[in-house]
Every structure is written in C-alpha cells, then in structure tokens.
Image (cartoon, rainbow, N blue to C red; front, side, top):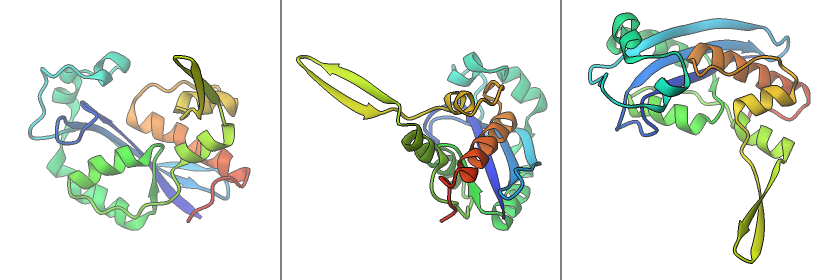
Length: 185
C-alpha cells in the first residue's frame, strides 16, 4: 500500500497573504517503510515578493535570493503536481495547512485521513498545564515533527525544507502505522 507524503514551505500562514515557495513529495510504502522521491522544487509564484519578511527565512536556509535564482515558475509544475495528486492518496503532517494552500491554488487532492499530527499528538498525550489565574486547565499538546522524531528515536533534525521534512513525516507515519495507530480511512 503506497501513499504520498507532502510538505510545503510558504512565506505566510495564510494562502492569500504570501507565496508558496517550496514543495516536497515522497512516496511511502506502508508495508516496507521504503521512501521514494516524487517531487522536490523551490517554486516561484508570479506574485512572489522578495522583500516580504517571513518566518521561513529565519528558520531555514531558504532565502528570497535562492527562490529568485533557483525557483521554478509555478505554472511550469502545475501539471506535474496534479498528476502526482491524481495518482496517489496524499497526506501531510498538519495536512489542513498544506491542503488549504494547495487547494487555494486550484489543485484537486485525494486526501488520506486521518492527519498524522493528530494521531501522534493523541498517542503521545503530552499534557500541558495552563495556569489561568486561580484555576489550572490541562490540554493535549500538538506535537511538532521534531518532537515526534525524538520520541521514535529517529536521529534527524527538521530543517524546514519541504522534501527533507516530508521524508521525516513519512518516517513518523510509518512508525505510527507499524504500531497500528495510523490506519488509512
């Protein structure tokens, strides 16, 4: 059983306020854990603003100059991406974010449920105490990719580059799948 795992990098948290600047997609064989590359490109959208201050520039090695020099024009990859989305069922860690961005740009995606981020967060149940005046409340913390890598003792570091991150996410999904926590719906 093979699915695709994707990750994107953007210049904003909202798809109508920034640019999609990188897409990485890998294929995950849930029976063997084998990961194969499907797509790995910096993207330059037509309205890319290199002067925009973005979280990604401070937390990765992506720079506006890198996007301008190596980014593939978005219109040149639309067909290739849609073919991948048509061929595979797709998931992503926090897939609501990734899918919202891609659907906002017109892509049709065959989504795999559930979201691995939600499964991991429920499984690990990292309880956080929040003080609110004289009362305390507890909630289950949403785990990021790095916390999951550490839990599964995968000695790798999330670098906030789309392809590297989707490979990390595929490894997390495979670990959840082996524990029978991640079932394709």
